[in-house]
Amino acid sequence: MNGGPSGFHNAPVTKAFVITSALFTVFFGIQGRSSKLGLSYQDIFEKFRIWKLIMSTFAFSSTPELMFGLYLLYYFRVFERQIGSNKYSVFLLFSGSVSLLLEVFLLSLLKDTTTNLLTSGPYGLIFASFIPFYLDIPVSTRFRVFGVNFSDKSFIYLAGVQLLLSSWKRSIFPGICGIIAGSLYRLNILGIRKAKFPEFVASFISRLSFPSFSNSPPPAPSRSVVGTISPNTVRRAERSQPAPVTSSVEPSEEAIATLVSMGFDRNAARQALMHARNDVNSATNILLEAQSH
Image (cartoon, rainbow, N blue to C red; front, side, top):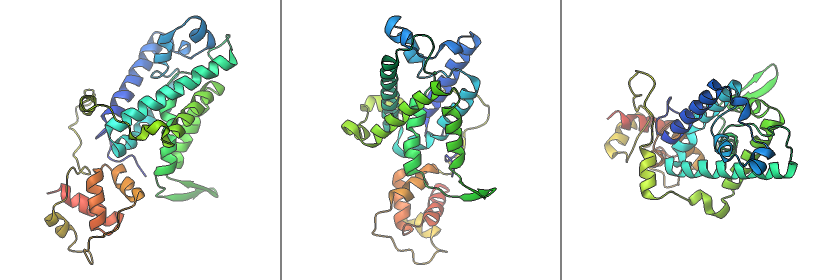
């Protein structure tokens, strides 16, 4: 299991969010104000520091939280590749907003005026992403270490647990709020999973990007296939494979998601699976053959 092609290929929203989060965290860290980023009852209901609500969505309050948080955000770019940047932006806005509202509600209940009860950072988006990660990303490898069973998904869960416990209850509460927000999105509350931004917003999102910080050339689209697969390409890729008969059965969502997570276009992945009779390995070969011509 991996997040598909390295870098932010087909994930401009994730790229923008990761860089923004890193910049805000470094900015407040240089000013020595990281420890003041957390939310408290006094900040919201007495001093009305609305800017802290906004900053708490982006900036982490410590370096360890930043490292684990950005790692998880980078991995979860796979979901933007699966559903597209438009719908992923809706997911980002929904999970962040709902999580923030739940945090404010929690502060109003506890009314603790002495400390910053909730830590800062995009916990809503990160832990909301664990819902589709648990339900939609298949396990591809299992192994044992000292008699304990692990899978290739275990490392992501361990990073999530580390982030969740990084500031004890200050980080546990925002994490739980994020999980609730992700569950509400999964349940399609108010039809949110079908929601999209207007076309002009979607056009802006598709162009959303930051300049690269490296001098290396852009990654070759070795696993990105856009459009349809020509019959000639399919025949060339299937010459060494038995019975190249197109399946009339609709490919499973799990198989499509597996190919999409590798960086392939969803429509192309579906066509390849139908040509390959729902065999993921054969479909992968077809897609790779298609991109080379």
